[in-house]
Image (tube, rainbow, N blue to C red; front, side, top):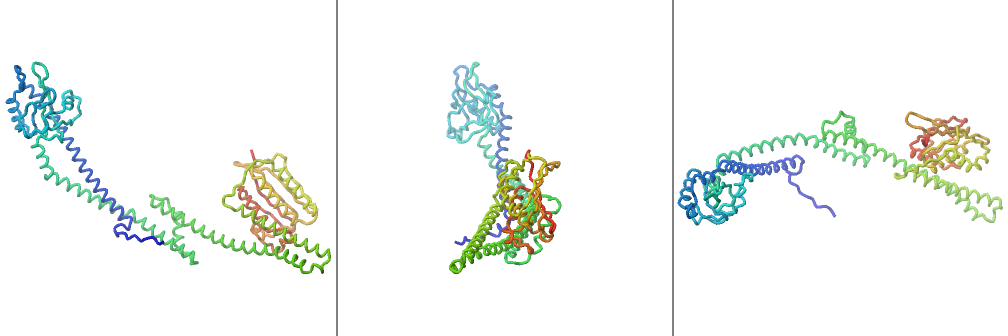
Length: 517
């Protein structure tokens, strides 16, 4: 099913517009949050200052006036009412209440209908009197129990004993109405206008900065699009454009100034790698086609030979002599044997060229492996009368490698030497320790005095199914994969192989293995 198309607004199509919108939203939300937080903390600050300035009002009143009679121990309501009126005239924010020892209001100068709560919690009052509180300290507002107000408080003594408390609320209705007026005042409007101007300036500056930052990304995005289009053209057989060359040059440009420059250089390096891998894929595809053609030819030849001789046996069975029948059978068996060798070598080479293949390293005696391999091939050596010699300083040469793979290297190189060495020839196996400042290794060389290899053929002898025009593989019972297998095994051991050869004088193969300490 096709994916539904999403119609995006033009405002959200580009990264720059998205960042600008995000910046505007962040500035608006942060400005509102700052304004509200500023108001809250300004209110807290004003309440703290107001409470500290008026903290001694209740104490001054209790010291200056007798609020409870000494004889009858009753509150003097007239004194309290007159005192409340005077206090509100002098300080409009103050409302005076006289509380008994339980916190119940026993006297005030306000209309009775305005009092909504008759009992005041004493914990804030005691904390205020003891000096344990941190300002601003709030208490219940008798006229509006849903709110708390800053206050001043003091004990009311009578004959030396505390008879109650004087509770002075420092946030009267007049004070609240003044606060509401301030909210719509000129200073508030100026604050809002100032924040708006700052926010607008920040938005303009942010948009300009985003444009400068996003411009290199826009250029890089266009280059990526052009590169993608170019690669699609390459897959259709079009010629390469100059874009890849310009991008790959960025990999060698001066050091990056910022992350965007690093991104451009990284993309240039990635482009160069993609181009290289693309070329490698084309080479691999050509090699695959060539391999399929070579495999088809090399498999078809022994198969056709075996099939032809077997068909001849069936058709002319009664006409053939015993010797001819035996000759045909031997030829068919030889062809099937060669076919089996070829399939085995192809299977082994494909396993060695797998991505996840890894040698199983272990420590072993190189001298023992050499003698074991020569002993296995001794019949082939004797059939041609070839003499072999092993040269080594001692028999305690241990290496760290995959013993089975190295044995296959020895087998293939010795068989190659047997194939191209004449009767009564010589093969020399030489092991020579080598040491450098960083590593110790054993140099291994296998040389013969055979037909040799021409200088034109030397660069190609490790290629799969390489055909020497002067010598037939079939004549030497070769699959054309032995040296390719040798090279791949040594590549897995990080050991390059070298070859020196002179026509009609012989060939020498050399490689090294790490010495086991």
